[in-house]
Image (tube, rainbow over all chains, first blue to last red; front, top):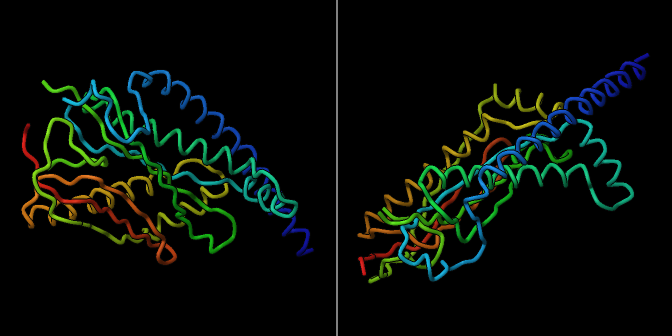
Length: 152
Length: 106
């Protein structure tokens, strides 16, 4: 009986994770694509030094960060995948989303300053989780760079 | 105070390097938020509370770094880097470091 209850809880969590997680992911991707189109005018490059034409601009540090959480389905899928090795697609899409979201926030911070370009983009990824070694929990992605604003 | 993560400040000249400055902060998560976060680990999605918390801590780290730079007479910090580490369960340290410099307009 106990085994059945445990199995039931597991399956319910799995189903919840699958449906909510998938809808959250597709909603997030849709909003990311929309905002990426909007913010395309702010060019983000990982080049270290400013292009010569932008040498008279004002510089300021801008950051964008986001913490995203895995869902139960992804955790289980990744754990199973871990047995046979290979690409953890479940986590790949999670990190891809987080990174693009962080860039978008960086771009909107730069847009507020009236910047044209963000140079020397750096990423930083870290775990924020209380899952005590079981799976990934949540990840934080930080994107930071130097925004160049035309001098008035 | 001017802060960049590149070695130069466009339109300015670095006249003096004052050395490394740093600012750090260790923040723990709110227990209530932690419970909410474990629910989120089932459903997935963004953890707004944590995003804000980390953003605030990062601003504080930058603030402390700037105070240190001001104390040694700098007016800009260049080559700033961030580093985050989970030092204990539920607490993370955020460090910001860079080079304090004196700049003047060219």
